[in-house]
Amino acid sequence: MNPGTGQEDLTGIAGWAVDLMEKLGPFGAGVAIALENLFPPLPSEIILPLAGFTASRGEFTLAEALIWTTAGSVVGAVVLYWLGVLIGRDRIYWIWERLPLTKRSDLERTEAWFARHGKKTVFFGRMIPIFRSLISVPAGVERMPFATFLGLTALGSALWNTTFVLAGYYLGEQWHRVEDYVGVFQWIVIAVVAVAVCWWLVLRVRSTVRARRGDADPA
Image (cartoon, rainbow, N blue to C red; front, side, top):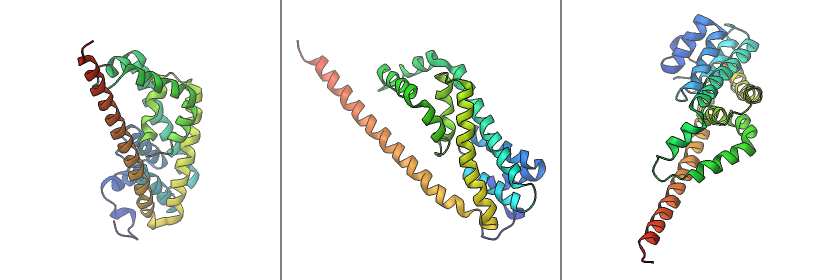
């Protein structure tokens, strides 16, 4: 996308999001962000600045952009929360115990950690790419009080959305510059997670191999 392009030149996800906003107004921005929560590959770092950019052009007000995008974030998160409730703790354990290289104790420790830090995780998780959507499911599985979940989600989402909507609003036709910076942050998050998962796999494979060798030794 070239700098200085107007909305009429946008294609792909950006064009789809703008089309929603043009047809549905600020409600369209809310719908786009709700879908972004349900389908994380849809990037909020494109949709939110675009909502701000659209507001700067007078299609709707800045306040409407902020209210509707935050409402969309909450709606998407609530859907995933209730998905976690429907899946339930028993099903999670049933699936977990049938995965390779996993132990029941791993999940039990995770549950204990979430019980201690769940509120902070839900709040700050709204501001971390990828985890922004995923964190709603364990909150539902662990049956975090719905009112607590709703409040933390609304507050965390409002902070994240306001930052990017305002960026798009003040950058105007340069709104797409936001994506470059957030893209770097997202890749850092992905890299950290990948390293952590690889390290966990290495430790678990070593532990499994040692356990099998111990079982194979004669008494």
